[in-house]
Length: 161
Image (cartoon, rainbow, N blue to C red; front, side):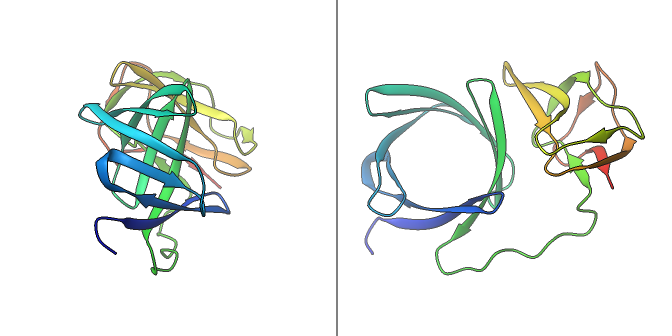
């Protein structure tokens, strides 16, 4: 295999193969597009390809990375090639902080019904705003943070039932 490493990246139910190539290059998809990835600060990268450049913030554990780019964010599962999907964790209804940050807005209240993709709260981290969105439809059963509060990675923020 040489210096190539392969992974599967999952966002929701969509999976995409990813290859880390030599020289900071990354191939997305089977025989797909290649991008050049350059670290510019801890947790911050510039991704270039197809005549475009994006600044991307990355945080979280190796198997569940939070990505923020151009005002959008998502948590993706990252699995080495040949490994199955990781099992569901206990307390899956709780959304936790992906990185250290400051809560700048809480957009929901206990008892509120939300749809997948609704913004629940907004964190400020690494000079970027990171909206935390509902991963599924549900009802807010708890809110564990308030605007202005500093949160640590993994700290529970909101629970959905």
